[in-house]
Amino acid sequence: MSVHPLIFEPILVPKIWGGRRLADCFGKPLPVGERIGESWELADLPAAESVVREGPCKGRSLNALVREWGADLLGSAAPVAGRFPLLVKFLDANDDLSVQVHPTQRIADVEPNAHLKNEAWYVLAAERGGAIYYGLEAGVTRERFVAALERGEVAPLERGEVAPLLRRVPVKPGDCYYLPSGTVHALGAGVLVAEIQTPSDTTYRLFDWNRVDASTGKPRTLHIEQALRCIDFDSPPPPLVIERSHVAGVWTTVTRLVACEQFIMEKVRMPEGAEQKIPFDEPVVWMLLEGEVEIAYDGGPNLTARPGDTVLLPAALKDGRVKVNKAAVWIEASIPIAAKRR
Image 1: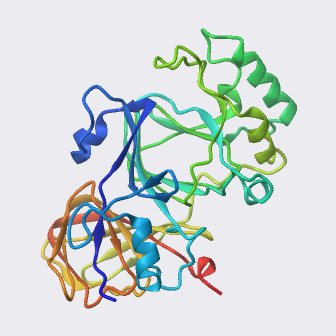
Image 2 (image 1 turned 120 degrees about the vertical axis):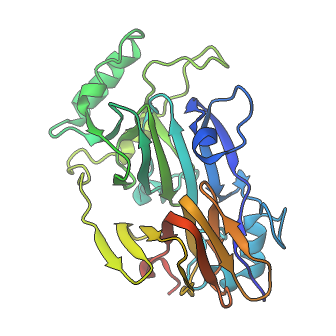
């Protein structure tokens, strides 16, 4: 079966905390007057399926191609419930996101509507004072945390007692953080990130900064009971610094950012004029951040990717080559051996 590189239409998601930088930074076609918090670049969920933007499969859904192309698309990677095993996004936080947590596998195994969600953030931009909330401060107990949540709910003009219990981490462009399921977290105001995650949209809100949703006149729903079941108060928070590794070739520099059971996240740099074979025999995702690349392959027209484009390279792509028209930087996501079919 003949396969080819894929770029999808962005799925733009309005959020109470969203902004307009996805248009400014990447030219995303944001609706007038909308606060857009997320651009789902590659999604294969029952409630949101990416659709091919251009090329021979224009208008077709990612899920349709997963079913039709099978191993030619996925290689040895195992689909998740018959769907593509990664979810890829850009996030623009004009305001703080809610304090939240995602289900662990233990919770997903017993909750019918819960799905494991591990994710990683690569910081693209951060305003002065920009930060993320990344785990709890050392020594915070369940009892102390619950008491703070209760006080926060009745202090509408304050941030309650919750913020001091969260580990607030200043961030800058180029930082990367891995957030395993069960980690209390929130993206802070003024921060723009690229996100790689497992294919789940299960989020439990613990605290929403006493906000009122203008569209409803009411606070957004919290999920405190479900969230507390996901948090291990006896374990330390994830490490702030992830050891990076670098591999440099004649044309390419690759920096390993995150490696977990479900995905590998790397940063790739190639200079203008570089041209080389695409070496993969497994599916790979490129989120282009800078420059311009042209992808050639056997059997079809070349595909050009620019900043803000996310490219899916199928496992069985024939004679793929990449040519760098302008010095390029991209985030590369792949699926490790541990997540492949046994």
